[in-house]
Image (cartoon, rainbow, N blue to C red):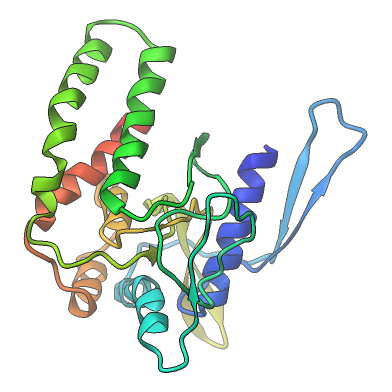
Length: 253
């Protein structure tokens, strides 16, 4: 729980500091020193969330989140942060980040993600999928698991083809686990404001966040229309969307 909640704390900090989308403001982790299992509590802002599907406003705000790091890069006074694999500081998005990864591991569900910094998105994402396959081979057995390993050995060398027509990918701060259960809303000054929570953040390809959003429902057509108005689909988007879904299908095996 320590790894999970520290990852969520740093994720919420990073998202909150972009000021692009509403998240519960995180405060600190509290450890129960008397507990036998090392209980850790994440203390964050209490919000009276009302539920509801992801609307056009959230689609627009999510696009703003994904564009935030690029805008920092292009700002006249931009300062550049090149994190190293040994850098354990949290990356908040306040300064431009030019690599893929995150300062701490974050958990997608119960799965700890290796967010070690990497210069190449394809290498970073292939590492994520490879970990999922190896986890299955260790924890499960049977013909379907063996088949998954064989199919991965075929797919892995073909990954570059899915990015042939993609412009250079600028790292975007991602929510990382944006399914309908992690979306809600609050009433603030008479206005309904979308809220996202329970993140598993890292800096990655902006398209990644939309994969799980399309898997389980809860996101309106207006949400996607508003998002794509700000960040249009690039060539080959549909095939990469299926690729990014693969990570989550393996996670829910």
